[in-house]
Image 1 (cartoon, rainbow, N blue to C red):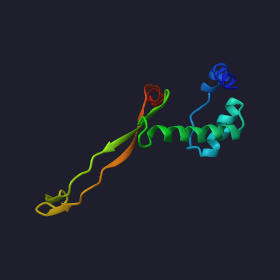
Image 2: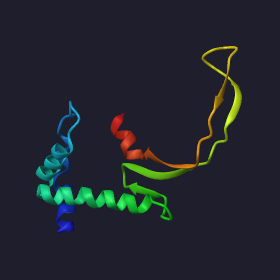
Image 3: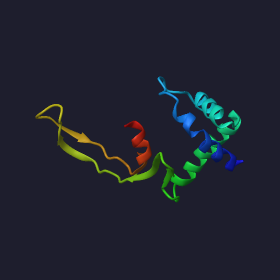
Length: 125
């Protein structure tokens, strides 16, 4: 079945490229319906693909995992570790010259960073 989907994408690529720009952002159900119409899959199958994709990303970026996930042609998702920052006292206040302020400490944390890949950058140009 997966091979059928790839074949369908290749044979219909020209017709899919002719569609115009989207004026308003789509909701999740609209995105699922659009993908289902274009691929011939059911909405239930498309929703299962989205759920599995979310689970796959989660397994890649959680603790003791690879730390990054690449969605080919679109973006790369990374888990970036930020070190702890110590507290600082008597720092000049940038908004009120002549006053000093205290900056509290921040614990170490892990952030999610998404970077666009070449194909996605070309879509915008």
